[in-house]
Figure 1 (cartoon, helix red, strand yellow):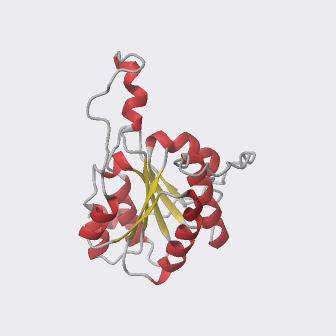
Figure 2: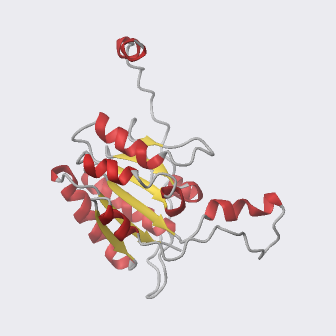
Length: 217
C-alpha cells in the first residue's frame, strides 16, 4: 500500500540548477613514478564523462574527496548526482545498483573511496547478478582518509598513529573478479583517460559491471 501511494504521487518539480562555479585551473599530471592526485583523477573523469554525455549519473561516496570533487567534477544537469548524508557510510555501492535498476539504459558511475567500499563491497555481486553495466571507480589511497583527517578532533596529535585506518595491499581487481565483475587497475596517470574512455564507451552495451581501481595519493 505504501508503494502504491508513492507511485500515485505526482513527480516533484525539477529544481533549477545553480549557476556554475568558475572553472578551476587545470591540474597537471604527476611526475613519472608519483601517484596521481585526486584532483587529477576527477578532472580526467569529468573530461571523459563530458566528452560523451554530461547526463551520466554519478553516485558518490568518497567523503575525503568530496571538496575536491566539487571543484573538478561539476554537475550541470538535475538528477545526475546522488550522495550520502554525513556518516551514512555504505550507501554508495548499493545505491548505484538501485539507480541503475531504476534508470535502465542510463550510464551510471559509482565514485567510491576505497575505505567506503568495504562497508558494502557485496553490492558488486548484486550488480553482476543483475547484469548492470555500472562503472565503479574506486579512489584508492590505501587508507581511511576521513578518519585520519578527523583524528585531531578526538585528541590525536600530529604524527600519532591512528590504529586500523591503513588499508595496504587490498586487491580490488581480484575482489571484482571474484564477484563476477571485470576489474582494471590504473596506477599510471597517463593511462587513466584511455581506460575510462574505453570502459565508459562500452558501458551502454555491456552486461558486466566494471571496477576501475585508481591509485591516488
